[in-house]
Image (cartoon, rainbow, N blue to C red; front, side, top):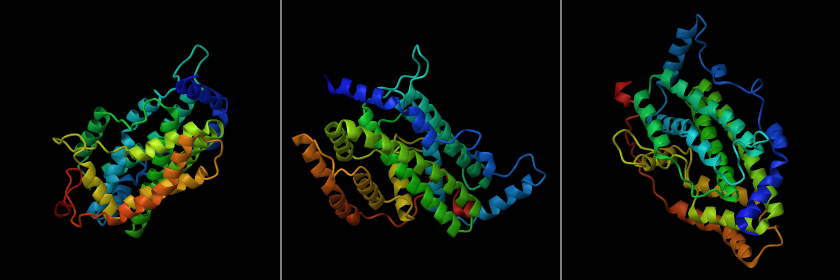
Length: 332
């Protein structure tokens, strides 16, 4: 039997538990928070006062902070690209003669939860008065137009490694922004980012559990898929980000520099996430591996130390670089 067919069988086997995954890792619509829970109430007579207070506090947040917040928002807003990619994964069928495929059901409900993130952050940015919303909106449209290729093909094993990694990375980013917002006195924004980070961690637990279960069924091929993704390096969802008039991906390095400069997401965080996945999946204890998979395990075990040395030698420009997204401080 081909590896493709084996993967399909594994996905069909795991699909039997999709309902329990949904119940354990996702929250019913009526119970989960919604963006309006954290924003000024437009139906209230105090709406204008609440918006004024939000804008006053926003004035004190530094430039790089706004760049990172905008970049995180745009990344969340490009959700249609991620859903369409995952819906094409082997073993995911959007509709069948017998109704919804279980994996399609999972992905739709995961998308429903993720959709709230960009919605909430976008509204906050709009009310803050600190950003050029038209430029932000153009960047978002470009990012969706330009597509996204994480290098996973239609392989569910590689895709679940990618989502396990990325959900933890987005948790780190949103959680750090929450900490900085609190430090700068914006408790409302801090709570917003904290709530989004909580969702991301919950989603990380789900996707990493899928990988754990695949390791139990098909350990060698799962190990090789993990190695493949780490050798290739995990592609950041915003790696093709650009401002209006720029070429594809032109703004990503500047955005990454801003994130590293204020400590929101760094090269060392990337290494830390890899190490956490090694530990979570207990790859040092997995048995019944082929010789090739044993070599892959050895590579993965040694990789964090190697990458740490590289990360520690990286230098980040000290000066802020201006973006069309964020109004210059002198204009605020």
